[in-house]
Every structure is written in C-alpha cells, then in structure tokens.
Amino acid sequence: MIAALRTPRGLATAAILLVLAVLPLLTQAFDQRYLLSIGTRIVIWSIAAVSLNMILGYGGLVSFGHAVFFGIGGYAVGILSANGLHSGWLQWPVAIAASVLWAALVGALSLRTRGLYFIMITLAFAQLVFYVSAGLEAYGADDGLNISRSRFPGLIDLRDKASFYWLCFVLLLGTLWFCSRFANSRFGFVLRGAKSNDQRMMALGFPVFRYRLTAFILSGAFGGLAGILLANEGAYVSPAMMSWVKSGDLIVIVVLGGMGTLFGPLYGTIAFFVLEESLKPLLDLGRKGWGEYWQIVFGPMLVLIALYARGGIDSLLGRRRG
Amino acid sequence: MDYLLIQMLNGVQLGLLMFLLAAGLTLTFGIMDLVNLAHGSLYMMGAYLAWTLIGVTDSFFLGALLALPATFLLGVVVEAVVMRRLYARDHLDQVLATFGLILFFNELVRAVWGPAGKSIAVPAFLAHTVEILPGVLYPAYRFAIIVVGALVALFLAWLVARTRLGMLIRAGASNRRMIAALGVNIELLFSLVFGLGAVFAGLAGLMAAPISSVKIGMGDDILILAFVIIVIGGIGSIKGAFVAAMVVGQIDIVGRAFLPDFLKTFMSSAAASSAAPAISQVLVYVLMAGVLVWRPTGLFGQRT
Image 1: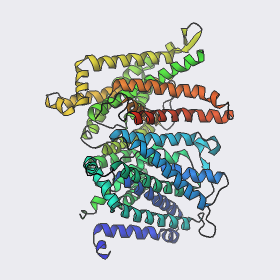
Image 2 (image 1 turned 30 degrees about the horizontal axis):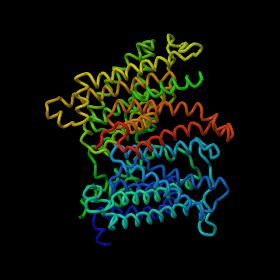
Image 3 (image 1 turned 135 degrees about the horizontal axis):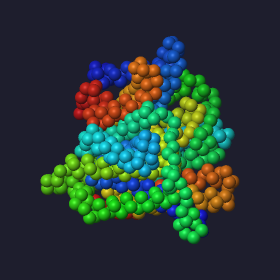
Image 4 (image 1 turned 90 degrees about the horizontal axis):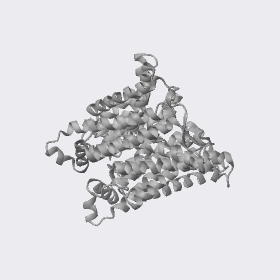
C-alpha cells in the first residue's frame, strides 16, 4: 500500500481519489457549485467507463453500444417513477435486472460474431433501444421525460447534491474494487487469455463464449448502474443519453485512459471532461465564439491518439509491473 | 394498390441511396480492412458541397456534376492524410480515429455553413410527376433517383465483374498481401477505391438533399443503416449490399406507410403514428439479428 504510493501511478491515483473524495467540501469552500455537477458526471461516467473496460480492455471486445445501458438503467428508473413507483429499493434492482437481461440477450447474439460484425451488432442493438425509447409516446418520446429522483426514505436524500455525489463516489469505489477482483481472478485471466488468443484458450478447454458472455453481462450490470445514477443526476431521461455518440465517447474515454488497466477509465473520464471544459474557453481566447467549435480540435486529437498513443494516459505514468 | 406501388417505389429509391453508401463502405472494408465510420461524413460533405456549387453555378445539374469530383478529391485527401495510416491497425484504432473525423467534419460544417440546415430545391426539369402506370403518378425527381441509382449499381457491377480494376478489387478483397506481392500498386488502388466510395457517398448525399434536407449529422443515422446493410449482406460483397439495401429500404418505407393503419386497429392513432417509425426501424435490426444467427458472416459473406 505504502510502496504503491512511491510510483508516479500510485501517487497520481491516490491524489485523484483524495480530491474526488472531498470534492463537495472543496466546491463549497470555493463556492463553485458548477464544478460539483461536473464532478458528479465525471464519477458517473467513470463507473460506465470502468464497466466498458471490463469487456473492451480486458476482453478485447469492441462494444460500440455501451451507452445503451445508460438508457436502460435510466429509463427503468424513469418509467417506474412516471407510474408513481418512487422507491429506490424497487427502481434500482429492476433497472439492474433489465440491464442484465438486455446484456444477456445482446451478448448471446453478438458474441457469436467477430471483428466488424461484433462492433456493428452491438451498435445496432443500441440503436434499436434508442428508437424504441424515441417512440415511447407515453414517456416523452424524443423529448425525454422529467422524473423525480429515487427515494430511499430515512437513508439518503438524492436531491441533496453533496449526498448524491458521495453516493456516486462510493459506488465508483465499489465498481473499481469489483473490477480489480474481476481482472485478477481466474475468470479475468481466462478472459484476458482469450483476448490475446481465443483459439488457444478454446483448445485448452475453456468455454470462451460463456466467459465472454458472463463478462458482457457483468459489464452491462455496472453500465445500468451508471444509467440509474445519470437519470437521478439530472432528474431527467431522454433517448439522447444513449445516442451512439455517447457510446463512441465511452470508447474514447477507455482508450484515452488506458485499456485494460484498473484506473485507466478514471483517468480517461477526467481527461475527457477536462478537455471538453478547457478547450471551449481556450478557443474562445483565440476569438470569441470559437469555443463552440471545440470538436474541430478534439476530433483530430482523437485521430492522433488512435495513431500514436495506444497505451493512453496510464502508460505515461511509467511502465507497468508484470 | 396504387398507394402500395408508390410506397414500394419509395422503398426502392431509399434502398438505392443506401446501396450507394453501403457500396463504398463494403469495398473499403472488404479491400482495405478498414472500419470507416466517417463514410457518413462524406455523404454529408457531398450534399453541402453540392449546395454551395449549385448556388455558385445557379444550376442543379452543373452543381451536382461539379460536387462529384470535389468529393472524390476530398476522399483522396482524407485517405492520404488519415486512412492510409490506419490500414494496418486494429479495428478499435480505426473506430476511434474515424469517430474523431466525424466530430471534426460535423463541427467544420457548423463553422463553415452555420448550424441551420440548408435546402436544395428540386431542379425545375424534374419538378413534375410522371405517369409510371396508367393513372399512377410518381414524382419525377424520385423517379430520377431510382434511374441514377440503378445505373450506378449496374456500372458498379460492370466495374467489379468485367474490368481490370474490378479484378484487382476482387483480388484485393480476398487476399491483399498477395496482390501487393504480385506487383500491383496497392497504394494507388486503395486511393482509387476510397475516392470511388467517397463519390458514391457524395452522390447519395446530394441526391437525397432535395427530398430531405442538408443538415449537420445527416450522414450519421443513414451510415448506421448502411452498416446494418453490409452486415446483413456480408462484408465485402457488392451483391450482398445490393440485396440487403433493397430489403431494408422496403421494410423501412412500407413499415412507415402501413404500420400506422395496422397499429390503429388496437391503439390510439397518435400512439400508432409515433410508434410506427420506431417499429419499422426495430424490424430492420431484428432482421439483422436473424440473419446473423442463421449466417454469422451475412448473406453473401465469405466463410472464414
């Protein structure tokens, strides 16, 4: 534990977690409420990115539809809430169960395929849910749905920004803990083995398909959790939260941070949000109004990252042991 | 009956537009092993370039004709600057880089042409209806799209099956390294194929413009459908792309046209008209899932 702090990676990670842990106190002290809402979104997106990393980073499976779990988790909460069922004890398990079921269905079909087919099928299934949600006239269709936040009477009030942030942060820690157990278990090693050579793993007698399907379902469950939180953060759900661009953003985040590393998705999410929030004012400095076009700079940056920076931010923090 | 015929023609027209997009996509994937998400951006750029050139030349025909070499050039430049470096990379890098290109092109269009959509008027010489069958009228412009689309499809079939370039394309799709080893200038071939794909995408974009509108991100939704089409048809197969595009076009249009009436038999008419487009989209994806369960490499894909 102490030894880990001596490496740049350990130090950076400890510093980030420390800042995240006390963020509501900091934003209150400096009276920057806006930063707390960005912080909350960073934590929620980190949970989603960690969950995508389980299949993308450790499993090598390029799922281009991960934002669909934002939508499924979010809409499960939203639809129950619109029907007068506000208890989080009901909403959250239902939302996770829905995510698990959808992940099982999509995984069972898409994991039969490889390469581009896999990418496109995961994307297509995500679009399917997107269009279904956009066609739900009773639940706001394209415009989305304002909801009231999940209720946990006597335990926590999600309307309080700081409490909600800390809840998200604790859930992020839980997700990271689970991911580290996952990655370093026998299960995780089989999955990583299948990433580098699935034929060999099959020849060794591992049922690779079942391992991957299990990973896909776990990933979906945590993705659904992020969706629940995202819906509660804005008290709002809409098809836009699962647009394919969000799925692309999640892939960008995982690659930017460092695929197949425990904290990579966390670094990636922070870098992504910091880039977004800082490119706008930076470009505005050049000329008023340019900030709006920040993606003109961000797009080519992605191209460069894809071409030259495969290890992501994690690899900047020194070589990995083992 | 007439209504059904007209809707089916609309389906053919949409299918041909998607085929133009899918053909370039399936070629670049089949030959260069490149996942090009930015193909939809070329579709969008084709429409915007045509809008500008039509404004400059004051003629739909001339503007459209000039927009084609312009998109070809754009395609060749994009290939030389970015794509060429991606061929040897894995799919994830390609997805990431071309996703970056989409963001770039969408914002570029916003910066250059502004956030509001543009419209291209149907050219005067096609702004009437034709009588396709006694008593059945059909807009001449849509009919022209079908004619042009069919001609391009025939041209492509001829190009791929009967010419030396087509032979190289087919050879490249089955074994890239072998044709490079045989002394074919593979860089030139790749540039040409990419440029060709860009022209088809641009053509589809500018032909679609008078029917829908020229707007930012217009290529993204249709791109996903084009991907669904090449996955159903089998990656690398022009024939597969054609068959799948026709089927998807019919499902989409006929679904939109007839589902509302069917749904109204058991739900309110407002709910039916909002659910119908969603259901016809869903049907397309269900078709894809079904095809892949049955044949994981698509209808005409190569077994590996």
